[in-house]
Length: 513
Image (tube, rainbow, N blue to C red; front, side, top):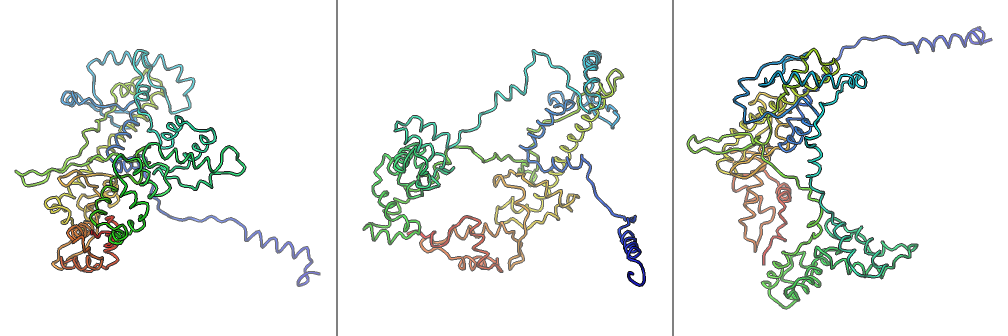
């Protein structure tokens, strides 16, 4: 008998029925909100975030990928503006330019449709794609020309050294050892591993002695100082290759490099039985040598910086004029040729669909660029308005400016201002400055005057520049100097942090003898 007089079979059935009830599925209604961005909104945000050089590249990509997008000729702006008309497509209104030879264009459309129809119907019936119009064989291939005219990538340091090493006369074992060494020279020109580590006992192609001979030959290659294992060796190599008399400097580096790095010039002068002035002159000559010779060769990763906004002062009006530096950005429009193809009854439906999608994409990119111009210009004007003292007097008068204040002034979201200033530069009488520089927090001095953190750092730099170099100020003394100007509440460690951000060494290394 089972539990409570039930049979074991009945007990099992009851338990199974209970388990089924627990595993049953039930429907449930729930309300929730989700925000999904339309593709054109995402594209607009991406365009807004691009600096001017990246925007030029993006426009080139769009012109190459979208056949209906073309550059509006600036020479006929006044003439074309009077002839523009709205062409309605299945997706909306498209602004196009009416050509003078409309009849010839329609003949081209008819011919093009007849040539393409069979091919499109066969291969593209189920796709949103269509080939571009055929190009005459007499016309140059712009993409091929661009590839031919593109500059070759710069030669790397290792390739540069290998080219020289092939011309060096040495034994085969030394040549192989040198090739291995070159592979381990870093971008600054230093050998990053010990020679013993490069010698594999199972490899009989060369010995440690071959490695030493090869390294000596490599250190005679260009640029001078390459193949060194530390700064000391790098300087000694360059001193040995110098055509001037460098005996004093050679002794200074070879015997007293550690004391030199610690700025212990009086101790060195006592040991070398010379004056501190002689050592200072030697240090000045040493400063002309390159401690990173490898960086002279190889890829240049520095990207060019171009102003997105120009700010100019007008004496007559006593105000600043803000304008966008977008003269290199071409004006875009939708091709009238393809806009008319969409309206033609002789064009296949899949071709129309392809063109309609591209027209919609073209209009999105045009609107996004115009929106970028409008937003960036308004943000820049707000910056100039709130930072007028900076443009008049300079770095010390940069005021705290939260992005939310500019966002309220322009009438956009805070994130829009952040995207608008990202990677953008402003050109003014004080130089080319990142737009984000004008947005920072700060503090009030004892007189109630607001100072941004940038201004505080500029004041700190000014105090260090004006100090007595024979008795430089400590971080605590700098803090007191700042307090005397009204900037109070800074801790000594904050001063030290700002000093490091400005790449200013400690008082010990700033001391001049």
